[in-house]
Length: 593
Ligand code: ADP
Image (cartoon, rainbow, N blue to C red):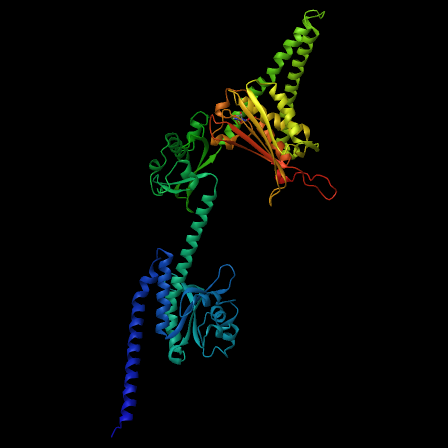
């Protein structure tokens, strides 16, 4: 007779067996699924990294389920440090644990399996030497089974010719307090082949993606514009600079489009086609009778500012020499061409400027010479003539000094300027210059507005005169209709980045400047379009900027726009920095330019 108690025990046993049977069935079904799905999982390269991640996530999950492990994790060799590091996704381990799970390949269970390429079981992480070395207990690991992740290279007859170990696959903590057995090793070895293939593919894919990113970054960091055209005349690559050059809208993707759809610039398209022709038939170049056609194009941006680009073309081939396409490089040579153009203009302008004072000098000297007996002109007349001659000699002298200073700056930067430092009352210096300049005009009112009245600064008296003369005479010259010229002087207290300085502004009501002019004035020989009808050399401000650099100072212009007047501001330290002996520190190399 079966008692109620015995009946209850039997009922529980049946229950447990049923549960185990269900689990075994599920295991078998999983195994079957892995077997049948293995091929497509590793057969072809998934298109995105996220797909690899998903595949691996499923793989570790299933592996853990099949060998009944609480945790499953893949370790791979870190390319930078050479260590074996846990690679997400894993099963049963937190992100933080994964980040900390790393070991040198000559230590621990991971190292032993990786080096020997032989699987291993450990039954007690607390006592197993290798597990202790790897400090596995800290990840709450009791026991485990580990297999190497191997990639096998085979020849045509399916013989293994090479084996590469890409990592280690671990399963930790057998469920229900059980132990891992040899059967688990065999199962894991089977599954590890899939994992190894996916890992190898993912790594390869990652490398390709990284290489591509590196290439794109390099292309983007070029200051030149770059377009790669494939064999079918479609754009394969176009960097930001090239997109800006040809005003490609930000939301338009030019990749894969025919060049004519993206570059709507006749002159450029013609040049690109000619370059393609030249690459296909290199002898063509000579056929044109040795006269090389220019490789330059001129592009105007939306503000109608002109840019000149030199275009280089190179064929791109693969390792076997098969053509892949053509790379076009657009180098901005606007400044170079402008300087060349301006130099030519400059020579004629300077000749003219040198000749201008010579004409009155020659005239008055002739007049005085003709009056052999000094009877035609009074003493006052003659003094007046001498004064005019002297003024023009001074003007000539200043022009020659400016030219000499420009060449000195060109060779040595602002540090090439020889400074004779003195303490100078700046307002007085301004008043002196204003007096001289007032004598030149009766259309302008020159106002000196200093607060405080006396600002004593360290400067070279000749150089500060040169700066003030240049800026104030420009204010007069570029205000042909007259108006007020206000010279403002202020003391600026020291800040965290700048020492106590003097700020000077020369404000006029003249022709004004465009935004483009504001950036460009001060470049050697630069003259604004609206000032071309007024005489000048375009070296005054270049000199002023460098003279201010020699004071450790700077200049910046402001203007509301054409016809709205301009203000030229400059500031420099009231006292120059000194060394321990009290001598003014020379300009450092970085300030030379
Ligand atoms: P320039 O001998 O031509 O006057 P500068 O170097 O002194 O040479 O000035 C460069 C250019 O800057 C001038 O040609 C002019 O176009 C512009 N410029 C300078 N000062 C003014 C001003 N006060 N108002 C408008 N334009 C100015």
